[in-house]
Amino acid sequence: MGLILEGEENDQVLLPPSNFSLVEDGIFRSGSPQSSNFPFLDSLNLRSIIYLCPEPYPEENLDFLRSRNIRLFQFGIEGKTEPSLSNLKDTIMEALKVLIDVRNHPVLIHCKRGKHRTGCLVGCLRKFQNWCLSSVFEEYQRFAGAKSREIDLTFLETFDAKCLRPCLYSIIYQYQGYGSNKRRLLYTEENLQKPQITSV
Image (cartoon, rainbow, N blue to C red; front, top):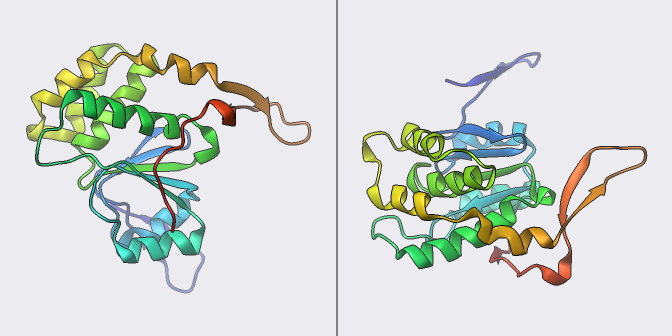
């Protein structure tokens, strides 16, 4: 189901990518976008994309990102072979640091189908937000469906959100703009490890 833009000579139907959903204000999730989804992505005014696959980003999608000045953060998590929990934890931690930095918002998180790898990252964000484990599992399973993976649930259960605390110590609240009282989360540069950024 898509959105319709009215008021133009030809109404345009905006098609979201598969498994698209709002996670939080400024954070979205989906499967891999196709060219037919680009007008919809335009409507999100994205600043960043967090891509969770090891494969190179499709050239057509890179062209779209370049033309919109959208940053691509790639964190290669294998989809078919089960990664070791320690490797998965390290990669998810690096992706979380990008995800919780509001300078990267609005941001779209996606893997190939928007189920397992995306579900793990969103699940860890939920633990960071102090969601109870049953709610974390319910959200993961809503997107994974019958293909829910036991290793992902084990990972989510054992993920310790407190391990983000050193990163939190390097985050400051800063007011943006003249007279604005909207609080924003920002990193102090000296404590921030550089994420893997693919130049587009």
